[in-house]
Length: 137
Image 1 (tube, rainbow, N blue to C red):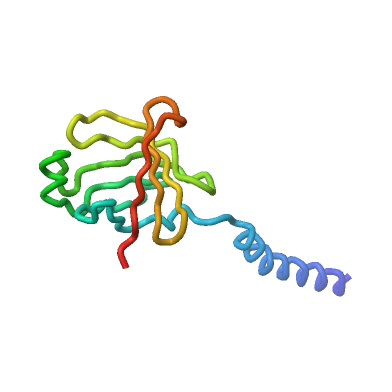
Image 2 (cartoon, rainbow, N blue to C red):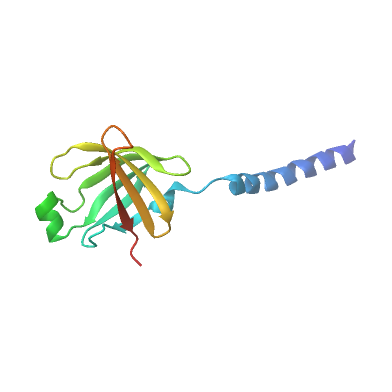
C-alpha cells in the first residue's frame, strides 16, 4: 500500500507541475499588447492606452497645437473607455469626441506590434470611419 501511495503522490506532483504550463500555452494573445503610447496619423498628438481591471481606456498623452485648435483636445483627456478584449479585437467601448462629447462605438484591431487600426462608428459598424495609430520606436 505504501508503493501505491508513493505513486499517487508522484502523479499528483507531476500534474501540479505540468498543468500550469498547459494552461499558459493554451491561452490566446494578451489584451495588454496594446498598452502604451500610440501616435495619431498626423504624428503631433498621441494617446496612452491603459488598463483598469479587465477593461481598456485611452487618454490623450501629447496634444499638438492643431489638436487643441481643431478638436479641443487637452492633455490627459479621456478619449476611449470601457473596451474589452475578446482574444482578437478590443470592442464594446466608446470613443468620446473631445469637443462635442458625442459618444461613438469603437473597435481596435492590432495589425502588427506597431500598427493599431481604429474603427469608429455610430450605431452600425458597416457605416464607419477608420484611422491608424502607430507605436513610436
